[in-house]
Structure formats: C-alpha cells, structure tokens
Length: 116
Image (cartoon, rainbow, N blue to C red):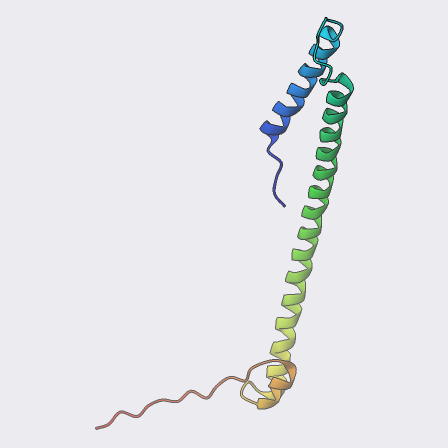
C-alpha cells in the first residue's frame, strides 16, 4: 500500500486552516471575493483529516493481515515440505507414483563413461 506523503498532507492542512482563519477575519471587508468560503475550507480540511485517519487504519490492518498471511504461509510450507519427505520416504524418491502427489521423482544419475 503506498504511503501518504506526510509533509504534503501537513502543508495542505495547515494552508487550509490559515486560509480559513484569514477568511474569517476579513470576509466582512468590501469587495472580498465571495467565492472563498470559510465553511468550504474547514470542511475540506476535516475531510482530508478523516480520509487520512481512515487510510492509516486500513494501512495498519493491511500490515497486520500481511503478517498473518506470511506466518500462515511459512507454517503451511513447512508442513508441506514435511509431507513431501514422508511421501518420498514411503514410496522412494525415484518412484513415479510420487507424481500423483504433485511431486517430481528424482532422476537417475547417469555417468558418461570415458572412452579409452
């Protein structure tokens, strides 16, 4: 999961807060731009903070699930390796029956004879 750029987030939230404070202080002035609304700025700031909080929760949960998955995968791989060894021990490493278990039989080692 990609991370949120903390510096960028902090700068944006701080700018929204300062802009909202400026609007609050100066909105009564003549010809103040009506398009800039304090409510919009504060709502935007709260929305970003809420989304970041939700993201951090989801990120933490994803990391916990990833750790659980890795632990489970390692345990299952270990058990599977043990089961393969048992099958090889029971049937023999070169017996083609082991393919029924999804295991490849060991190949015969062939040694080339040197010509004299």
